[in-house]
Image (tube, rainbow, N blue to C red; front, top):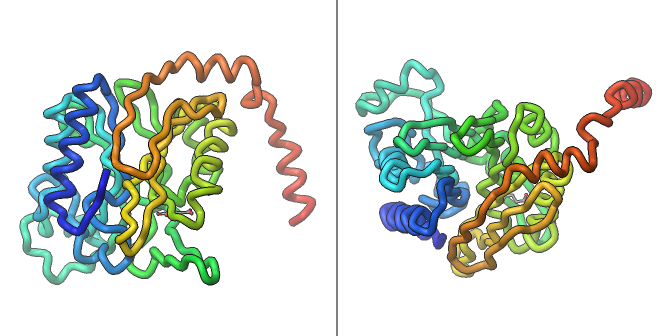
Length: 289
Ligand SMILES: O=C(O)CCC(=O)C(=O)O
């Protein structure tokens, strides 16, 4: 989807995308990374919201309503979250009496069930701090804090490992989700014109082949006038590593069937999951330590 500076408009665009995907038969829908705010460390403090029912800003309630209205499992991309440092302070914050509370900002992905209830949330674990000389410098940690949990969510469709964008570069997280029973990994992500062309599809396909499961990467559409120009190319990969479908840079929706039998088929054909040699790896690590 196109993402602009107007939060209300972004939420309306997302709602329409969820409605149209559901009308086309989707029962699980994924939105992009940072879809209610432009992507940039200078924007996060202004756009961040408490992510709780009734919280000011209304993003949480709007997302819960999108899931419930369309009766879908909604992977609600990610949005900037403002959270009290002390969890006990959160209720006060929703009531608007939190002015003095210390707060942290996160890049947070929410998941809602078809009844509008929250199933899970993932706070981006690996912040996007890179400096490619002359090409791109982005220091997400200037304003955000990292989450500290691996997220696996049980949905009516299957177990899903959920992480955000730069998290895809860390294969350990994906492997933990697969070991926990995930058959699909979902990455809302916004790669860019430097890393996107070579790395976006490669990383999504790598995680699929490593773990023999489905992988979805969902990006904002490209906006050449934005401070951060997203690569786009939302993609779904199967457990064989094949791209089942992908968009290009423009806004759009792809609706695809996921046949979960493919997970077991690939795992039976190429049984790497039972052929691991952890004792060799442990000895190798010990030897170089
Ligand atoms: O890893 C990359 O190249 C891009 C990551 C990114 O854009 C993000 O984490 O938001």
